[in-house]
Image 1 (cartoon, helix red, strand yellow):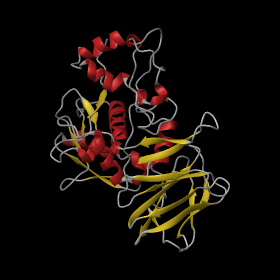
Image 2 (cartoon, rainbow, N blue to C red; image 1 turned 90 degrees about the vertical axis):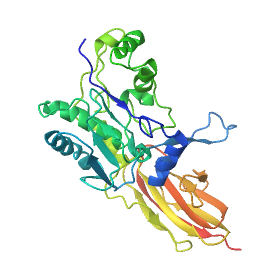
Image 3 (cartoon, rainbow, N blue to C red; image 1 turned 120 degrees about the vertical axis):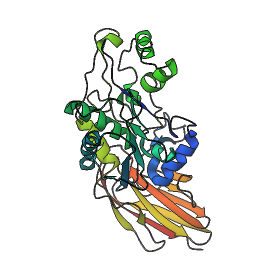
Image 4 (cartoon, rainbow, N blue to C red; image 1 turned 135 degrees about the vertical axis):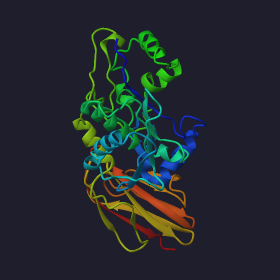
Length: 364
């Protein structure tokens, strides 16, 4: 069987002294408030209280300029990598700037021969600045264009926050792996059983990623040879962005998004629009003194609202689904002085619609 040239995900913090997951979560939320998201789960019976599922993302701030630097490598190879990586700009509201000096969030190396890997999204910010966050271990000036497209599109998908498609929670049970053969095959490539579990068999927890249905055509899907599965099952090399790839990343980084919107307490409602399915809106307001505040949405759109703070974008104070009029959200809370954020999203994953949000102080 020909050797599979596949990538593995680099742990947050890099290959050595990996940063604990909690610190990685904190870095992600400092980058983007809605990297921790709450969604209500319908109770199985009227006697069960509504609860929420938490999604933990590693997305960059929407509209972000991400600096990319090459730490080494052949000039021809670097030019090809940069040209293909820039294709992600057409799919997202991100800008990839390749720089030759100064700080860079993504740092690319070619020295780890035989292996391609990347950190996922904001985990790059946990890697010491002297170390790479991405590696291409087999690209040369004469490597085929299709192989460049396959590998570079895939690794930059990781760098922008995507996981391996076969580790998507919705992929569980969809690939009939012949596990003994998979362990044996990757052992010959120098992988331990733990490496195989981490990069192939283990699927992400449903509260650790925003996922779609399993997409075997995704640029994030490994090739799966028939020799490593039970029965007759195989997936070839994907070199193009799938329709789901384009839609999914367009929802995570919607173009023309207003970013974080400042709301003045008591100044009236602010109109907003969830124009793309799975979009989130973030509003910021300041509380100068302890007081009970009323936070509401209005309109015909069924939304969920989360309150974060004070002064900690990752600290979720509370959330609400339908305590407002009709399907609107309403939170009444005594707030201590500080900065707060409201995160609003549609209750349905693909839902869209207009609404308004207002923050006011309760009359004494």
